[in-house]
Image 1: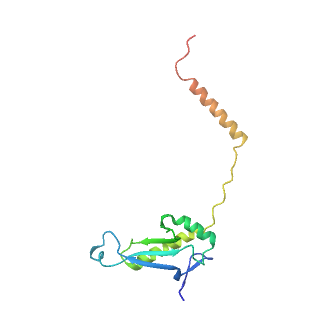
Image 2 (image 1 turned 30 degrees about the vertical axis):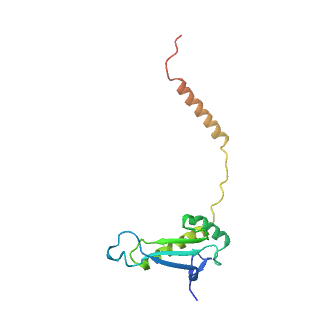
Image 3 (image 1 turned 90 degrees about the horizontal axis):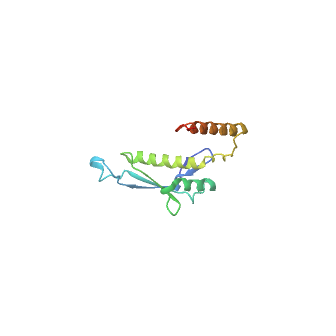
Length: 143
């Protein structure tokens, strides 16, 4: 049986739910760049995961953005590091952080407030004062 990866205190996923593909990383890499497959594509099927609560899975798919395929699979590519192991760790850490963001409770709804009567009066007084200043500018009137 595969191990479990703890995401939060209440959510953990099976290692079986993750699949990895290795490919050659692009960019500079010296002699190894054309022969060693160090880049990692980590895949996680958010829709089919039995360990994610439904609301978390929905938020996760929304957060994934362009990393989400039409089938509901999240694909995270990692090629920052020179070694396969570090790229695997990086991809897994990024996936877990994404799931943690989706599992966080949504912020409370904003409650609309109204300015107080004194604040409204102060605003009107300042507008009147500013208008008086502007009216005092310009050419003096001839009598």
